[in-house]
Image 1 (tube, rainbow, N blue to C red):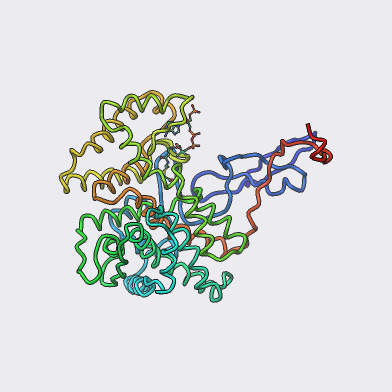
Image 2 (tube, rainbow, N blue to C red):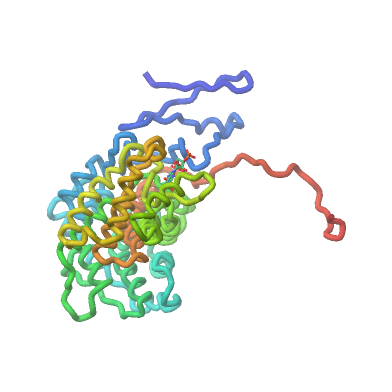
Length: 427
Ligand code: CMC
């Protein structure tokens, strides 16, 4: 029998349906409340489901993350990022023919219009690459606006392929511009992660010198970041997309939301924090700061809105991180020693245990990226690259079914009506 919830307001009882989830929490359908003149209040969406979705499932209490039903651990061990992109976009793992066709489509779309590349010249050399990447992705709208009909499923899929194909090229261009170096063209003979690394660290005309260990670690990082249901940046993409704006603009909005240190910017913030700590002997002092309510400092790379036991991406990333460090022989690097000490103290501290604050993916991805020699300013760009299939799949899912413009309400606490006072009469 269908579950119902009743609420009574001013003596009137209202029945609300409970919608059943295929996994996890059912939700109370409050849509009918508006006709009763009632709004719900949930700042930060702590207990609000903003949409229906069939893409990704998270069980935060038990540390479960699945893309289209496949556990993240299995995908990280057996798949590659392009296959995961296909899975997210299409709902099923590809056959060999489907994979080849998808890969060919991505490789053919990696190149960026020569004239458009001038967009980077508008940025100073020291500009943060996230700023450049956000602007460049938004700028792609200028190239494809006329040929993108968001009501057309084929156009939406072409957009998805373009964005997955172009984001590594744009990210590498932003990085190269920041360093005053010339761009390296995409190389379709290379794998997705290797091509990205070669465009960042290679030179035009020279064969790729990217090590397999590093390319594999990068591909894994992309898989682990590929989607995370209704997080802040994905919700931003859905919200912007619900206005029916150009998809490149909607994705660019998501990139902006990702940049913050509470979200994708945390991987960069982890490194900045470790550098600021500077020495193992100061770890205790920083843990104390993080616990001090009068100090806004937080331990970067710890805690998560949804995971209250462990972050399954962090478990996979930790494994990958240790393997990479061992292979590179850099386990003794001072920054890594600080990270280890910090993790140990925080895991044993009552404050962190009580609040269920565990190292999240950004803690280990930051350390791994640093160990393989990726400059800190590129960390969040790498998250952006990984998250692209998730954003575009959510945008496509939203537009494939009836949707409404996202338009939250508010609890108004401002002034009551009052009359304008001329400036000469103001106290
Ligand atoms: N260091 C110290 N205290 C913390 C931390 C932290 N990193 N995170 C949460 N707390 C405390 C917080 O002060 C609060 O304490 P109290 O109950 O005494 O007021 C309690 O833990 C609950 O925290 P919250 O702020 O209500 O939790 P939230 O769900 O709103 O925020 C978060 C989640 C990820 C924004 C937050 O934990 C944080 O800022 N962490 C550091 C930044 C970070 O690593 N972000 C990456 C998240 S994973 C990547 C991604 O998916 O975006």
